[in-house]
Length: 161
Ligand SMILES: C[S@@+](CC[C@H](N)C(=O)[O-])C[C@H]1O[C@@H](n2cnc3c(N)ncnc32)[C@H](O)[C@@H]1O
Image 1: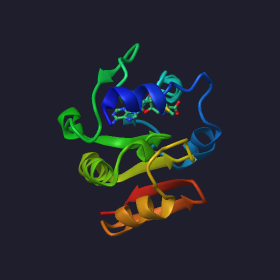
Image 2: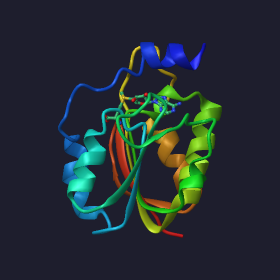
Image 3: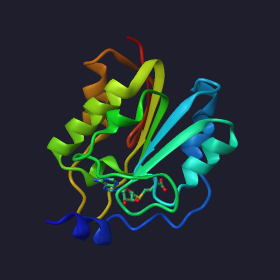
């Protein structure tokens, strides 16, 4: 299955222009300033929101973004962009197969500063890979991250060490 297929079939950009409510409601848990990495940024609705709050945001997506950096998660190296205070992975991890996902989650762990935040939202996209919030959170718990919030398809985690 080619990347083009993945992109055309599954990864149509979310038409919404407002940030996800979960991101807004969890802002209070985030470091008040710093660098943000928005992976699979789509049309940049969350990127723009975080930039409007004063964060310095790097956005990456394999679909040519209007702004930000063209990058294929699971193939390209996220660590090339430095370290971050907050990583946003909204509606993207289930488009990566298990191997790609583990690679990307390892890269997220590497690029997040101690005390930094990861926020993840998943949804049951048609034909997406199987990916649960338990799988994602367990990966990070094994590396010393802690839960701030965890529900069926969403989590906010903090890197404690
Ligand atoms: C459902 S959209 C979500 C967009 C955005 N995060 C949001 O919440 O509006 C999924 C995005 O992930 C991107 N994507 C999927 N697989 C990717 C990969 N392997 N590398 C980079 N971007 C990917 C798609 O191009 C698409 O823009």
